[in-house]
Image (cartoon, rainbow, N blue to C red; front, side, top):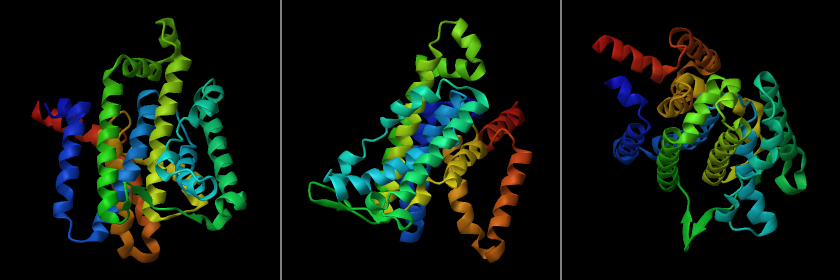
Length: 310
């Protein structure tokens, strides 16, 4: 029963909505609310990445590139082009332009291609100083709607939390649809999926664009939340961080992506007591988790509870 509940995408959305609604009542200060907002923002990007890696089986090592596109869109658009910040959010469709040629590749060739794409975006953000401010970054105008200026941890927690619930609901619908079944078939075997009449290139592109839109929106939220954006937002380590979040939580599980994001956002805060050994402690924790729960935290926990109940 527990395994079936955890694996149900709509049950995950329901639980997530309840947690998002109740959490602010349990947090003692704005600092914890800020951390919760960051968890929601990063979890949104990982939910999209999980559609690409966990369901379609396509490895992306340059996902931070789209995260950076969203972040710089809400900075460059209003500052240099006079575009309202809310309109600059709509940038994820660029994934269609880069996705079609890249997704003709398979396996490690695809991973290397996405890695190169992400590095290219990061280089552009760092070197185009006239537009992006160069390595020092640039300020991001605050988002305003109907005279309401969106700023502060409280406001952005609710914006990011509600968007995460909506994003999880959209992912649940994709997973339960014929598109989701086609993605799972491609994940198992692209050749077998083609034999069954599935347009592999089309469905891989759908997953790629969806994941890029999630990442772009999350990047825009982070930039407007912080009020500043730098090239680090699109760096290679950020891409690895996203993949690590998805793997730690459990590939093929929307809840797993959210748990993985929460874990990697919270652990650095909890491990500050180790001071100079913080990164070593974080690495050890991740190694231990991957050794003892290689399938990811959520799928492994679901299997364990299901076995004990039986």
